Length: 87
Image (tube, rainbow, N blue to C red; front, side):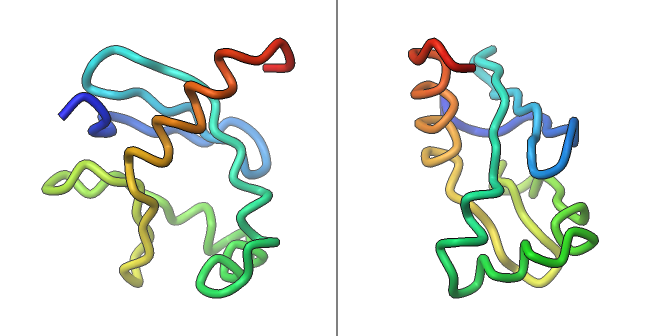
């Protein structure tokens, strides 16, 4: 699908450079996820956060213990940032 994640690279702190299969690319800052609580409190351990990878079967941003973020959520966040003047 158009929001399948092709690649993710760490660029700074909790910021990732995300590329989608449809060619869209942008910066995703996940630091605010820590404040969401629940399973995302794990991001407060920065070493844990850095273990992200792209699940090649589902094309989602994932972590080794099964935590993932839906690719459509990532796509929407990047689209929101692209539309703002504070990228």
